[in-house]
Amino acid sequence: MVIKRFNDKHEMAKVSADEAAEALRKAIKENGKARIIAATGAAQFEFLEALTQLPGIDWEKVEMFHLDEYIGIPASHPASFCRFLQERLIQKTGITNHHLLSGEQDPAGVIRSAGEALQSAPIDVAFVGVGENGHLAFNDPPADFETEEPYLIVALDDACRRQQLGEGWFATLEDVPRRAMSMSVRQILKAKKIICIVPDSRKANAVKACFEGAIRPEAPASILREHRDTTVYLDKNSAALLSPDTLAKNS
Image (cartoon, rainbow, N blue to C red):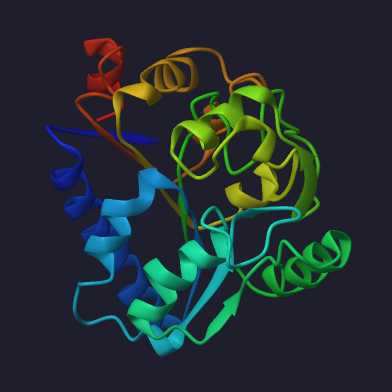
């Protein structure tokens, strides 16, 4: 794992988007297509804005998989990750080959269908973030580090639900769904390359726990340290609690 620290989230977004675009172009050149996993949430705003503006990516040859989604909300809801991906990635690039997780349909059927497609060939690059509670996708602590299932139906813990409220997606905590569909930790780790985007001071405690503490289910994103090709992008605020030794050792 490599950690890269930047002065602000816009510089961080530009450099991480350049790395993502290079991985997409390389996969398309070598395999005729690129298979990606796309994350959502406020932390991804600047990254996706930068990525979708870069030239030289044949998006018609990109197959996109959805990382996670709430159960029980329609695609028209402001918090819908299907809506997020449509507005911030699909419509901007013209991706036609995508596997969105519908929050309105039977979740068992949704994850079965998406999982079968996901496991049909390797994933070239996964875009992920880290939650305020250290979650990876919607794998809240303690995360399941063992299951090989591609997707899971999970219960969202209170810290995760408060984060969604704090980001402005819901009017009240009661409005935040209690269940979601999430790609499993082991499935995420199967991606050839992982680009992890983590800006803002509200993530600083999670960053310290996941990247300085022990690798453990109570700090789900800590498992990224076991992956052969993961780059974690931080701004000065999210990296504020990391020791100089950690930054030097992982740079």
